[in-house]
Amino acid sequence: MSYTMKVLEKVIKQNPNEPEFHQAVTETLTSLQPFVDANPEYEKAGILERLCEPERAIIFRVPWVDDSGKVQVNKGYRVQFNSAIGPYKGGLRFHPSVCLSIIKFLGFEQVLKNSLTGLPIGGGKGGSDFDPKGKSEREIMAFCQSFMTELYRHIGEDTDVPAGDIGVCDREIGFLYGQYKRIINAYTSVLTGKGLSYGGSFTRTEATGYGLVYLTSELLRQHGNSIENKTVVVSGSGNVAIFAAEKVKQLGGKVVALSDSNGFVYDSEGIDLCAVKEIKIKRRGRISEYVNYRKNAVYTEGRGIWNIKCDIALPCATQNELNGDDAKELVKNGCIAVCEGANMPSTSEAIKVFHQNKVLFVPGKAANAGGVAVSALEMSQNAMRTSWPFEKVDQKLKEIMINIYNNIANVAREVGQEDNFVVGANIAGFKKVADAMLRQGVV
Ligand code: NDP
Ligand code: 2IT
Image (cartoon, rainbow, N blue to C red):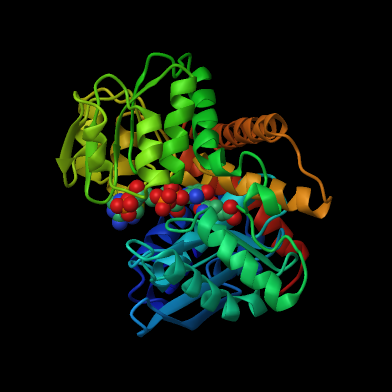
């Protein structure tokens, strides 16, 4: 059995009950296999075993008091996965489904994603099974303050710099930052995604969605095509989905659907983003309310967004939201490209279907790297005690996404797998991290 497959077997055996982590490691190691086998120094140095084992995983109790005066307890996590190329960097997710398996899969993906940005950031991820939905502002603040009261001792601007993810946006980052600053009595760049009035970067809010579409646009351009006049389906209706939809519209495409965990809306004339922003950002409402704004729109409860005919699909909600049957439906309807705004939204069966049918498919670790890239630019601006204008950060984001595309496309071509961006992203991301690990000795 090859070194890669031996490590994969061991990871699965030693980490039982972690299906999402197994899925992420399986996808990555399978596509790295020929490359790793051709370079025996990785085996000698135990690089894959080290890559798959987090440097540190912290699990802690988060007690807080709800509005009725009752004490609630949630689990808190921070998995510091790999610091070979920079301080741990990655988001915090607050969602009831959060568990060690999900945080580990996200942390593992983040290591390779952050490497692809070309910026000096290692990989980590954290979060809690706390559900911000339906909570009052005071409850959210109480939870965030308690979460940070434990987390602060494990993070720092040169150690670990968290940011947002599902359920964590500028509101939560503000409460977390306020508590950190109060505890350590210093104004540092310990979190990114901060508000503009206290050290945030222009374009960070838009970065993941915009970056996804910059990369998609470059992918299409290099295949003699463009986003102009294309019909696009975007899943989710959170931070990533809204700004992906906004950029598609700016580039002349038409977004006809958005979703949330309850259902999806279809608007044949193109989604009205002002309405969506009012519902989702201003009022924290449900996507079903969209039909109150547009008479021709149709809301459908439950799954089914991938049955809508489109040229381009941008899954921007959550892991495993697009399965093999969904992929077949997209292919049947003529979809030419799928780029992942979410982390691991396509199941392995779905990816197989895309590859078999020559659908251009770019995995999340490359396609959604714009968010963390602008986070790293936020760290740079904070370190320089400066703030760059929107246009400057946006331009840098665009360049980073085009570089990522060229890098993963070139690597795929070099290993004889043209247009296999899964292989390209995994090898390109891995090479830099593995090289840094080799040079830093057995640590
Ligand atoms: P948000 O919390 O802003 O939005 C999440 C969206 O996904 C909501 O519409 C939500 O619906 C939907 N969703 C969440 N969980 C589920 C579920 N289990 N089933 C169906 N729908 C679900 O998060 P983001 O937009 O920030 O994140 C979306 C994805 O993008 C995630 O995979 C995240 O890891 C990834 N990502 C985010 C980055 C960022 O900078 N924010 C950077 C790179 C990747 P509902 O409201 O019903 O829960
Ligand atoms: O998945 C991700 O890349 C993020 N949630 C963003 C991480 C960050 O540090 O900005």
